[in-house]
Amino acid sequence: QVVLKAQDEFVRTEGTGDLGVVSHKVLRAHFDEETHGVSHSDAEKHVFAALAYLRDSRFGAALKRLNQAVVSADSVQIQLGKDRLTAQIQYYRAVCFQRQKDTVASVNALKSALELNSEFPLALNALARHHVREGRLREALPLFRRSLDLHPRQSGVAEEVDFKSCGF
Image (cartoon, rainbow, N blue to C red; front, side, top):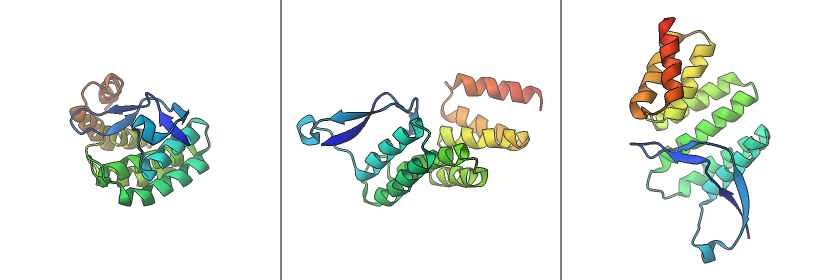
């Protein structure tokens, strides 16, 4: 059986346990799940496939798999809960929309992610960067600061906030 396997692309956010993308390395692993004790839900398999498509800049295909992941998430029983998984899926959908130059859909997906999980640093940062691009620093800075409160070791975000605060 062919399984998509994530390797070193996720990091857990301290405090919330959310998964964040470090890289988009998704590998094909040829092994039997039962033999190796690895079992992924359909939602996870769709997310892994979507990450592979993202890596290859196939955003339409990635969105299709992410939409399937949203539907499949209804049956997922995970420790973090369905809302957090769905928030992560919405974040990846926002990335796809942004790469397709659909800013409105991207912002809506980020807002959906944050409605499901208000303690999601990646989504907070992405929405803050959208506000910066639109010239709305007053809206961006609180989002960046909230993200840093949740995960203080984001040195790049801290530098971005310091830089933007100087011009504010």
